[in-house]
Length: 101
Image 1 (cartoon, rainbow, N blue to C red):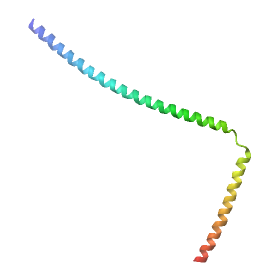
Image 2 (tube, rainbow, N blue to C red):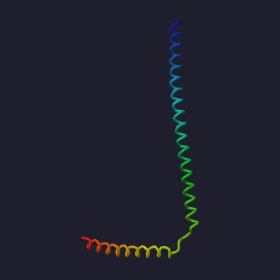
Image 3 (cartoon, helix red, strand yellow):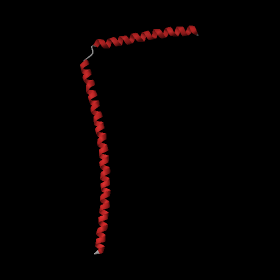
Image 4 (cartoon, rainbow, N blue to C red):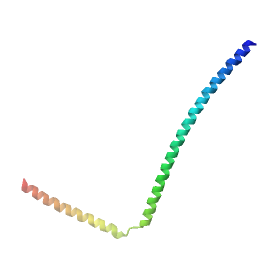
């Protein structure tokens, strides 16, 4: 009878220690889940902010409308004028360099 009581006491202590281990694992898992949830909420907030910015940019682009074809021609011609001006200045600089040498 005493052996049976000792065995039951021993089993009870094993179950209790097993329960404590499981409770510790559960507490660790709860902390890990809370940390992951906080991280997920932060990323979702950032995603919402970026989606709102994207929508605002798209709305602003729509509000601008389509540029007329003249706008593109103006800048293309202006670019070629600047290239010719730059080449003229470069040739003049080369002449000055040749004089100074």
